[in-house]
Length: 546
Image 1: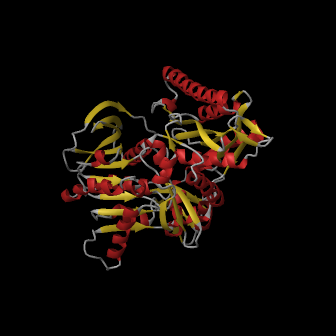
Image 2 (image 1 turned 90 degrees about the vertical axis):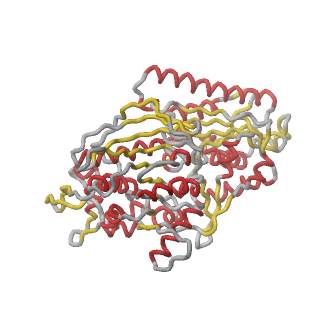
Image 3 (image 1 turned 120 degrees about the horizontal axis):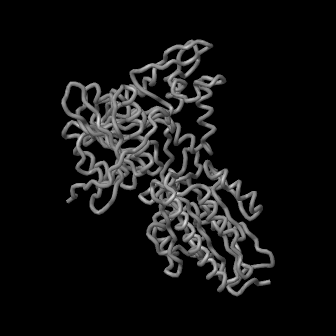
């Protein structure tokens, strides 16, 4: 039985509601955009988005391409349903990611401000079943009624959803670690007139989500099976979305141009469907990513790449316990000098713990060390895994994770490992993820440490090489893994599937601990050891075998 949530630590959240952070703006509104030297009003949403806003089905799946405005459209629907008097109920937006919760409630505040509704955004924590969830909320009036409704966003899980009244929005539902239980917890809200909305991109291993999608397609096509739920599906790929917002006679996508913050610049060039699609292709690191995230193409048959029994064979109680650190949520705002000094001291303590483990290993064994680093964006998790070659095996030296820290603090941790040298033992090679946000940090490290550091882009080809080699080492028990459940879950979260053309696709699914960052650093540290050929011969526990 779920306990009633307790509320604590209420505080006002400062959200800049004037800044546009998505591609799309407000429904039922028009904004001036310069076209061919003249200003003219254009609609703020494409017809596809308006169909989502006007949908009244009890359950709805929203499939838009990445950066296609899923969350902003749903936020507009929540506001407009209440301002129009269509839904006098509360609404809960559920996500595993606290920054996403704050971002979404900011969309709601932004839209309300455009309608002239004055309000404040409040943040607090709820304790449910001894777990702490962050909540941000706004209260908005209902025209013609004497009460307000509450719109809240929760960094929550199944227990946080159970018992919620009104509408429930399950953000990135396909990537939730327990989608079926989450849906079952939210389902009772529909009995009292509420809606369940599931905005999400395609997950290569989202079996339950895929089943709901197939139900919606069968009903849409007039071929429902017995037991199918009534589910509405609103799906658009990158081409459908871009051409849906295209205006004949000008060739521009005015919906997207109106929402672009750069539109007021003198050299602003309005987007065409062709340029919008080209920009999407440029952000996809390979064809499989493009098909999955922008065209909703599911690969064929995803399965666990590192089965749990295989991983368990490598689990060793002799491996040092991982060092994990998470900075307070408000730390990155950098507006509290006392907190900044405290966090700096705590991160310094993490470095000392890591160096102590490295010193202990170097004092006993003379084999070279290797490292794999998965650098997260500011606020996300960074994972650094260090191993040493001993008796033909790669043994754990240290596994360190930082969460909620700045880029420079993440780099300083990696620099400390690379600067270590005791008894002739050092980190001979480090491989790090140089894709997307990791590109600039890895380029910095490559300049500083030359050939010892290799920034590796996560292309399909590199993934096949690294993941396949890592699996061979796990199958032969040639490496070890700490007896730590969070680390084991991360490694087991790797999924392999195959596209329609037969190409292997590797994906690391999200779970309650994050996006499997330890799995990424795990395969990279093994690749670093595999690709490094030590000078002088092979390594043994006592030193070099010449």
